[in-house]
Length: 233
Image (cartoon, rainbow, N blue to C red):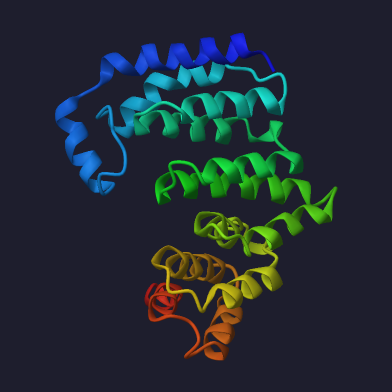
């Protein structure tokens, strides 16, 4: 990995976003995230437009360089830099493979909240979806993740198949939901319902059967979220 390249990229991002800071916007943004993070106060469209040329110009030579750049941004104090990091990973996810999943799950456990974790879930999902054709064992990484001690890693396991539609491993989807169902954690209950509702767009009857089978076992939140597809008929 070229540390010089990663350092230069990080400095360019900081030099680009720093002048765009709006302290008056940072206050409500921080409050929305329950005062967990400092913010520059840059709105998402402005941040993405400013960072886009640098993300396009950054050409990682390997996955280590890509992960290194993401980690470097993750270390910055303001939340916008973590957003740029996940945008970078999402842009170059094809550089990543099975061996990089632990590093991504490690990032999910640092400065953790739903905003960074859910985007990382999409990156993880892309890697697993692409990789399982060559190495079916890649999905076993998610089998381990769903049993992690860290709730954000479990959330990624539950959400990583979002948008897969007909490519969804339904057996895993339902087994993960069943395994996580006893949890009282809001972000897990919400993830279960979200994942089921998303799959219902492809196979409504399968989700309906599962909800009937799990009635009384899923939390009210999971059941309500999963049943929203019924409201949108």
